[in-house]
Length: 202
Image (cartoon, rainbow, N blue to C red; front, side, top):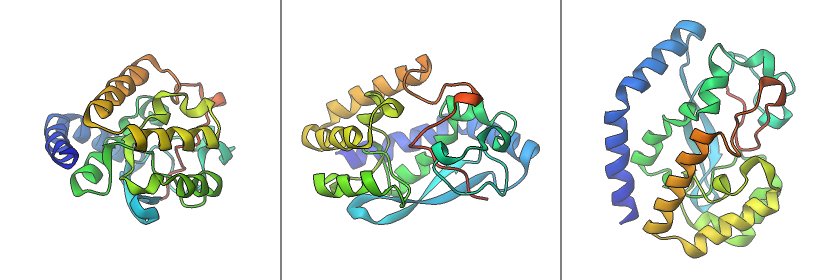
C-alpha cells in the first residue's frame, strides 16, 4: 500500500510541479550552467548505496563534504542557492527517486556514506529495513538541533510506529516546518550548517 501511495503521488507531484521544476532548471542553467541536477551516493535500504538527485545549489568544483564541514559555504552558493535550500526546493528531483523505488516520501533521511557514527547506530537499530525518505520523524523533531544518536533513535521509533497514517502526519508536519522555517536550514549564510545536506558534487 505504501508503494502504491509513493508511485501515485510522485507521479502527481511531478506533473503538478513540472512548471516549478522547469523554472528552477532554467534558472540554475542560466546563472551557473550544467549540471543542473546532480547525483550523489547515499545510503539506502539494506545499507546499500544508491544515487540521490538534487538541484545543484553550489558552484561547480565545490568539494564534496557534509555542509557543517564546508567552512567556505558562503563563497560556494550559486545565486539563489540559499533560497532553494531554505525552501527545500532543491530536494524536488527526489520525486524521481520515489517513483523509481530507491526512496519513499517518508522514512529515515539518507546519509552520505562517510557519516560513520549515525550509520553504525542505524545498523544497530535496524533502520535500514525500510526505504529512506524525503522527510522523516527526525526532520520534524529537531533535525539540526539534535545529536546523531537522537536522530538514530527517532529513526528507530519511526520503524516501530510506521503506518500510512503516521506517514501522513509526518508529511503535514514537514510541510508546516518548511513554511515556518522551523528546525530547517533557514539561517543566514553566516550561520549555515546542516548535517543532512552534503555539498554538491560537480
